[in-house]
Amino acid sequence: MLNEFLNPASVEFREVDRAVVKDFVEKHYLGAYPAAAKLYLGIFYNNEMVGMVIYGSPFGPNVIYSMFSADTDILMKNVLELKRLFLTDDENLLPSDAKKNLAGFAISKGNDYVANKFPDVKAIVTYSDSSHHSGTVYKATNAIYQGELNDKKRWVYPIGSSSQRNWVKRNLRSNLDWKATNECMSVLKTMWREVL
Image (cartoon, rainbow, N blue to C red; front, top):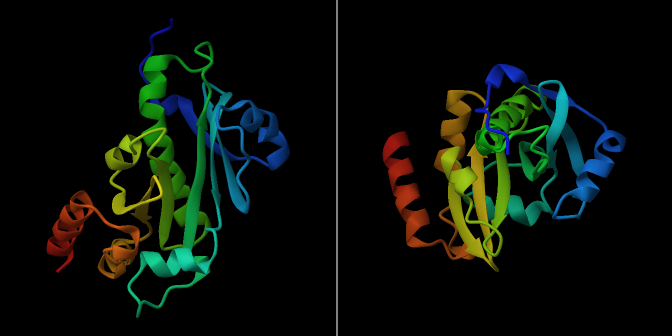
């Protein structure tokens, strides 16, 4: 087993097309290829592709409307979904110690990339499946927890300028539709104190 801490200078993100990543995705344990993808970001470590982040359109306008307060002026083009984050299990390409921090680093850099490429996007939504993982990487990267429904936890990243991020925070709903837990309410109460 190789040991090597993540060297951010050795990580690069490049847009790649579907053909380049198809085999990589099919070999991943989730197996499913996400629909409605708009951006494929290859993650390269020491010039070798070790993973990818896939962003795409959320599944219908109801997702958007359930995220934000009813009177919020929000459109489908203002939200993207972080559909998948894949990292290789090949320790010759990505040592386990480097992999530990790469997931969070990839989300942070990927979201920055989205903010620059798609200026209309104000927020990124993503989900964690409670039967597979608890969303630790989303907590560690300061995603806002919106609640859980049918074993899916929903997380939101405000992106863009400081004023745009604050706008998103002010307009997110507490999501009674999503049976928001006490954890969610605690996060939201803290958030409201920060922006008011």
